Length: 504
Image (cartoon, rainbow, N blue to C red; front, side):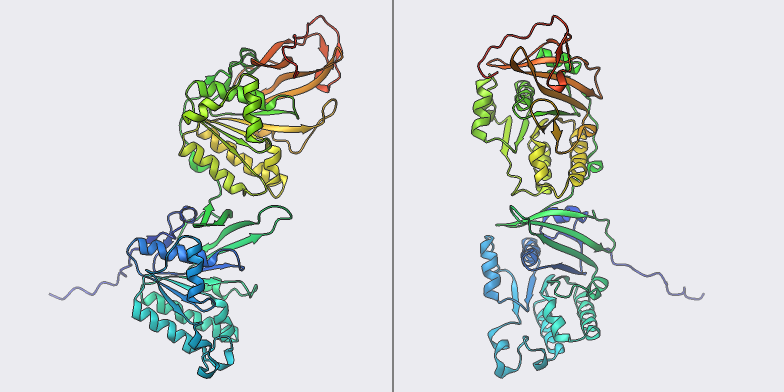
């Protein structure tokens, strides 16, 4: 009986995923990095590469893994100062400082600042000796720009990086190689690395700088492509994955709920429907915020949680004005049902705002969300085209979560022709128009519903009155023509509503 021939089947070691230490980046990567691979983290100075590297190593320490930080450009003291600014300690990490005082001493002829005085191989051997000595699971190599200078030519540089890659692979290390992009045309690293993550910093003409990350390459991983906003604050990098509404679909039963105003309910065909968004459009001061607050207060009184994002108005005047109109919101702040956030568009990245919305819905349980106003939110975006795309994903996400959303869009002008910064009416499920018009020597307000995808709404135009009891919707202005133009012609006998306050 002859022996069976040896098996020719290759045994593949199962791949293991590890966290980057940054929840948002893990989300973009679909669970983290493949272990025991070499990755390139590139970005200009100030984008947070060093901070990202520290977070990666400290995450390993928290999981019982050893970490090694190899620095060719910064001293160990500088690294510890960066860590302290974030409230971290690097005591559990090993730091190999190639830019030490001894290495910089001209008498030792080991200065990495003068490539002619040192062989590239000596630097590589020093790195390998430290890895063999410490046996780390995670390694950060900072930075490759010095290696590029030592190599002096692309071929030697590529060979040395390949040698390091093979060495790290044989030692079961997961490595982040940092590069400051001093050589814009260098693609050697992109082809060698298992994955490439690019960090960018964009200076704005006014306001805080914006940072964004793009996963350019990741072998064997289905990652979320495109740009994702992130911030670099105390505590490290916080990355906000780009919102993809299709990833958050869920089943829910649409429910029509009252706005708290019988007249507005009649106009809307019963009220606001959960899982839809309503756009409130009109010039400044016409009552858009007041109408939205009336709708939100009704939801709060039913026990729903609400989140109000205020871009334009101060918190003090917002609460005081609402209370003067009989719409006191402070009791609901005390109970925790209402969360009002004042947003500065000059300091907030669009992706960060999207994450705030997600947290309100998924963590805080908000079922009513109001954004006041889209005009200010527009200023946080690079251009109108991107605002529309961003809002499409935001609204689709909120709708799929069964949230009732109120959007306020201001228009320029008082009487006559009005102009919008951007037209988002086609994205809305319902659109409520508010207008000024002149009649009887007085400036009056009108309201109508121009669109509703979910209910059979009224097509009539009504007078709107703001008073101490909130909002009042009058009878249809059937005797007027041209109300929406601001200068109507009176052709009937419809009486105007009686003013109940001096603020009209």
